[in-house]
Image 1 (cartoon, helix red, strand yellow):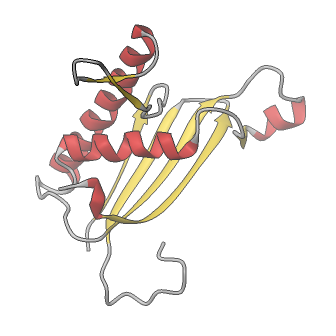
Image 2 (image 1 turned 90 degrees about the vertical axis):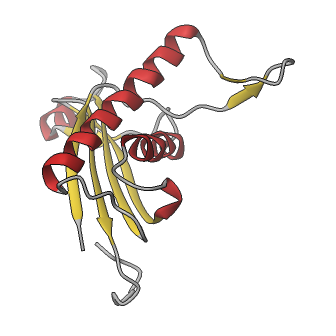
Length: 155
């Protein structure tokens, strides 16, 4: 079974809700700047995934049941205590919502050609941290088999 892991650098952006315009067009919500930030993040994920597809999978698109593991890394606020800052990471219990961050990654993985469709993701593990250091995400996609024993954990 294939497995691919790669890092995406930047500021992770959620896949926001869309609004139906009177003319029938669908428009992403938020300001023009927020839409540009989302577009840039999705492009960064798609580019890194396409590189991983070429480098780690020799161009073979992943299909079938997939697991997705994503660790989002956001900048640690200066207001964190010295002890937390010394640890180098802390949970990020604030916006953006984790499910919207994951949705953005799934769409980008499909757009990159790494995976056939994000509907193929049947198992998911995601977390978001505040960190001192680089920001972005570490993404792992793995093909899984129905013959694997399932004990609630497949990693």
